[in-house]
Image (cartoon, rainbow, N blue to C red; front, side, top):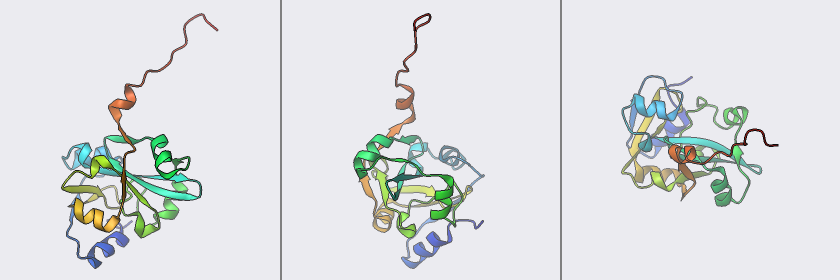
Length: 172
């Protein structure tokens, strides 16, 4: 496997976009990658591949958040589910699973960015491998990736706060 997505590297060089390549200890989640780079999870972008109908989508959100599939379904007006590993390999052949960069246009996949990432000056995201990330200005990212900015992410803590219904003992 290449150090990072060759398709993305060529794209950034073509448009002469300044970026930093950050090499870090192998990390198999975006939260682990953020920790390895000593940045808060809310500043590390993760990319989740979704499917709705016959279309695939990239949902880009902070590492410390989760995709609310119901909200995403409202945004794209299609029922949503996570893409299979086989589908992800097919769409992103030059990337490792779980390290997809948020430039779906390079792969024919529309990009949806959660509004929580649209407020920063910079964005850090996987570069196609579990040990590499790119840092660039948010403005450059937005100009090149052309994401649809909307709200579909929820914090991990919010998920844990949802009450779980329990059955009473001895009742049927």
